[in-house]
Image 1 (spheres, rainbow, N blue to C red):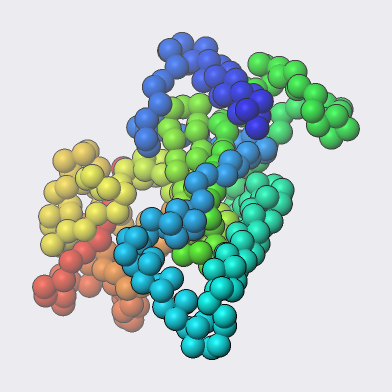
Image 2 (image 1 turned 135 degrees about the vertical axis):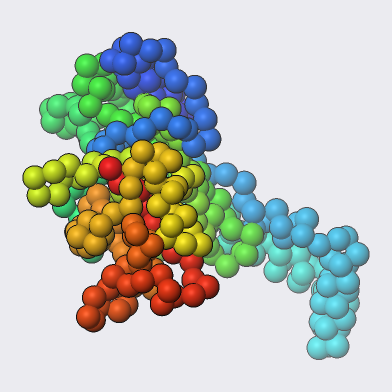
Length: 336
């Protein structure tokens, strides 16, 4: 396992140095989230190592109660056995045997190999399922193996052999992923899993979920899809013969304002404007996963001239006067 993480550290260093060489800048410092603009298409090294962490189940079982509470439970167990007619000389031996059996079962379940392989495999399968269900036009998060096919075959035949990495080939990668897992404190067979994704641009992403081993990566796969596939601000999209730049709102991607006039002033402050009805409709048809913004029918959207777009009220027109919605808040984003 130490050798695997040594290779992982070397690979990440190659990615960072490669990006620095291309940009003419020193490698950026690692941060919790990062402020650099991530690449439009993220290519991740397909091998995802998982390391087992602290067994939170046994930890909480040992330290989740005071010694007094543990002695009370033990005393009640002894009294129950005596009431059932068990000889007092056999009580300690029986309790010890029951405790040893429970420890043996946990030891067998925890020592069996393959949990890391299963987590990596189910994560990839879960992420691919989200992509098949949502069907975006462009997939922005990929597992990419830049090594030649013959090298992959050699690796499969000789898994213990050190791989010779080609720095020129490594430039096709955007980053690496790795994770940790531990038995959850609920002691009901579920895992607490954390997945880390480090990109060569300096950004780091962390995802966490808890659940049964065969299901926990479904949540993380959904989180990864939404993080990397959703529309980035700022970004550009082609609409007919023009290119529309999505600027977002002040301090966030989608803003919330007490009036359309206030939203219009916020866009003007960044040399942008509110979308027109046609732009709102077109970007909503693109959706959140194809470079657009879904205009949810449960929201009111600010427009120029103190007008409002209400998708829930299409007849005779979704464009209404702000006077029809007293006391409401309005969502918006800016374009130019």
